[in-house]
Amino acid sequence: MTYDEIFRDEREPAMKVWINGKFLDEAEAKISVFDHGTLYGDGVFEGIRVYDGRPFQAQAHVDRLYESARRLRLAIPYTKQELIDAMVETCRANDMIDGYLRPVVTRGRGTLGISPFKCSNPNVVIIAGQVALYPDEMYAEGMAVIIAKTVRTSSEMLPPSVKSLNYLNNILAKIEAVDAGVAEAIMLNANGNVAECTGDNIFIVAGGTVITPPDAAGILLGITRAVVGRLVERLGISLILKDITPQDVYTADECFLTGTAAEVIAVTKVDARPIGDGNVGPITRKLMDAFRQFVRSDEAYK
Ligand code: PMP
Image (cartoon, rainbow, N blue to C red; front, side, top):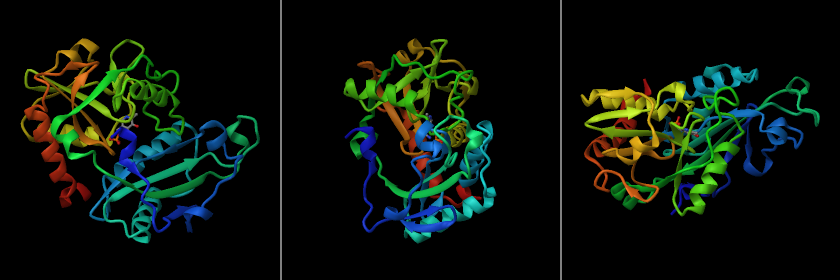
C-alpha cells in the first residue's frame, strides 16, 4: 500500500459538501474554471482529522488557515468561529464519526491574468472524506523512505509555512519516492539540511533525545508536530529543535514522521539504510501510543 492509498474514496452515499455557506451534494458543488485556485493554485487549505465526531485541534488548524491566507493577502469572508461551526456541521451532515475534513479557500473567479486583485469573492469549501490508517504492519514494522533530490522551496520563494494550493514542490518529491518504490520522501532545504517530508514533519531520536528541524528550516508548522512535541515533554524525554543533516538521519537511533494523515509512524529505512536496528524504536512506539490516547481524550478538544 502506498501513502496515497490511505485517502480512500468511500463516498457512498454522495458526501454533502459545504460550499460558501450551503450544503450541496458533491456533484453540485462546483467552482468556476476561472477561479484562480484552478488557474494558478492561488488559495489555501487544511487537512483535519475527526475523531469521535470532533475535529481534532480545530482552533490550531483554523488559525493556520487564516495565517496562510493572510500571507497571500487573501481575506476569508467568515470568522474563525463560523468556519469551526461549519466544520462541525459538515461532520454532522455526513454522519462522520471518524474521518477527515478538507477546508479549501480559493482566490475566486478572476481573469486569465494572474493579478489576485481582479478576482471576485473567494470560494470557501469544506469537503468531508475518509482517511484510513496505514495497514497495521506498517505501524508495527515502520516504513522506508528516500531523501529526495527535489529541494524544498525556501521561505524567500514560497514559504513552506503557507499551506497553499500549490503543492508542486512536494509532488515532485513524491514522484521521486514512488519511482523509488517507497511511500515517502524526506526533503532537504536549500542549505542541505533536513526540512520535512512531502506531507509530514520529521523527527529523529539520538542518544535518548528527540530532535526535529526548527521552524526556520523552512517547514510547514505541523499541528501534529506541535502536539507530539508536547507529548515528548510530558513523557519526560528531552526535545530539541535543531538542524538535522542527512547524515544525522542515517545514523539516528530512531526516526518517525508526524502528520494529520500519517499520525505518528516510524521510519525504519532511509535510502535503503536501516535506521537504528531497523525496527520501530522504543521512543517512537511510546509516542505512537501516547498520540493514539491523546486524540480520544477530552483534553485534546478544550
Ligand atoms: N508538512 C507538509 C508539507 C504537509 O503537507 C503536512 C500535512 N498537512 C505536514 C507537514 C504535517 O502537518 P499537520 O501535522 O498539520 O498535518
